[in-house]
Image (cartoon, rainbow, N blue to C red; front, side):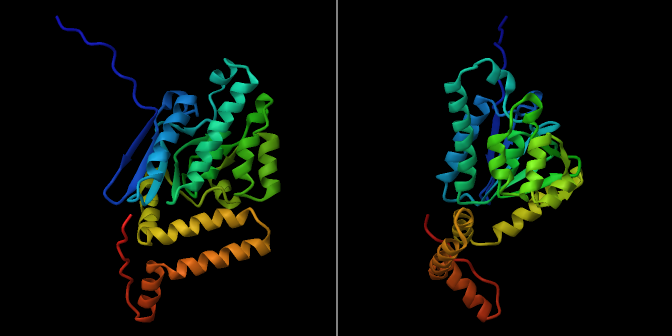
Length: 269
């Protein structure tokens, strides 16, 4: 009788894409609430690096299987290796993933179907756009176990007013999806059954725009945000001048003048 060995473990992150250039990254460990274990962080980094080098990529949708979007770092894994050097390496790895999302030349949408806490809330805040189901909730509750959510605070305070972010960080209290939208953490909130349709609607809006203009705009958006107003205007003015010289802007402006829809040029990668 022929016997088979144990089934291969499912990948921690599913990476698929379609003919439109939409890449989908799915956190695929619902049993552990999709925590950002070392394995998951490594898989995310591999996928993001691959997308960054893919000239046909147009957008990324980051989602998750199960009830939770992401419950933050894997505390059991962290507690098992109580060494400063290990923690420094772990948080540096997580930071690299977050910056890779920001540095991608295409928009990244978080599709949030459930709980997003601590580094999971950080992941939502780091994405360029976020669509949440009405049942989703958000928190940075590391303080409940004596750990201030320092790294999640970086994108959080860049999404919402300082006192609202500080309240979440100091109290560990959760906010609803509607509260997250009012505070600027997510863009849209819909019932769970409408979540995919809402993400698709947002994707269609992005895909109708030229990739080159979106890439230049995204890069400028994050760069100018970290500077003073005068330096920001200098960066923005230079970016707009370069954008205006680009073939897509030339076509877009000409189409506006001629009162027609633009025919975006197909540019070599």
